[in-house]
Image (cartoon, rainbow, N blue to C red; front, side, top):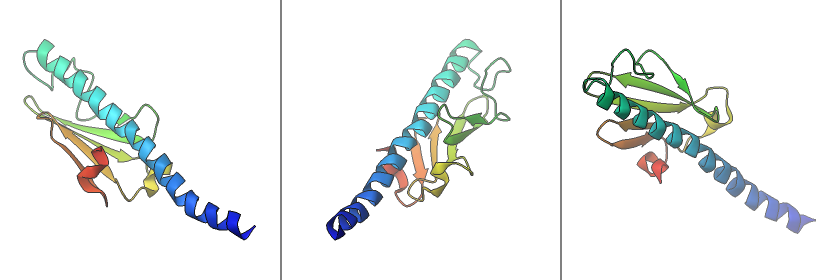
Length: 121
């Protein structure tokens, strides 16, 4: 019985970190999807990311497809910055390794938290 307890104590942290890491994909996927939408807007609407007909605007927060993250866009005519943060009441809120993900119009990917930019890996 003691052996099972020891194995469980060793395996559980690994398991929970694996689950957190898999949920981070939710942020990355939605940031990439928002990027594609903004790039289409830029192409369609007179080289402007912030065209009124573009579905992504600076004033509209986006909830990720799985609901683990909120994406806040900052959009101007020539640039955008998308930042994904865990939903405050969701299971990813306890993820201190990756507390936010950012993607810009130039393709720069950054992250905050204990893992820093390694969150994107």
